[in-house]
Length: 358
Image (cartoon, rainbow, N blue to C red; front, side):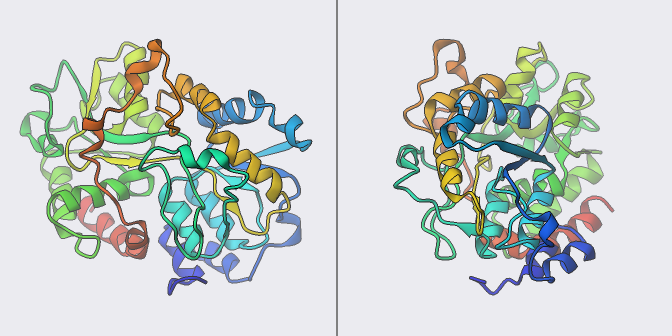
């Protein structure tokens, strides 16, 4: 281990239970569950299909490395838990993870360092799309898209245009405000809002109290995932919510009257591929990560999901140029300390369940 956080603590921080903790403490995986092919682990559905098309099919990856690719589909927390439980003898090769889960695995000693002699596209990353050195690893995670959470709102129902997350507390939006579930991306929003209100990762009171008030007094609705949120905006079950830039543009393309603003407390995250320590396919994994940072293939993801690329060399064509982020958009991004977030993850979940959901 590279920190004072044990594997048991890390898996508990992911919000999972005794079975996962027991699996982690077995000291590795059962042989039958170990990696037997180059395996990409990600959420399924359209996102999983997009990753396959952009970075495997379009890039001709299997032919390049003379290796067939397998796929495992599950939510991020389960991916991270399986990787932690089988640390050093991984069940898959490269998992698609957000920053927080990648940091957990780095601090658990379960990631292989990027070889920047192979991952040559790493040097072209935009600010905010990689994680700083951690746990003895100089480079271990890089986003292939720029994913930003701002305030998404119904342009017909929410007036004037929001200028702050706190506009969601207005009584005129009672019953029409969405809150992301803690186990989805609520944890990140909680910390960003908390810091914008003067709190710190060690003092979550300002953010927790504010969100509890939003849920209690404004009848805010908990949204469990992206698909549920898209449907809720489409049906006007909610009018305003912290949500993603790319998904807002997807709603616009479907004719839903929504837009997004990036007030103070917005957050920039990303989806990227760390390499699991002990993989049998390290050489191919390093090449795969480099492909995900190639501007040509990133643009395929932008066309599918409307998130701008993470490479500074990617040039958005005129028909998708409006998906790009401006410097003014990024100036309000709230930096998050994922080490601290993970330290408090389980304790703040207990508070969330009591104060926000209770």
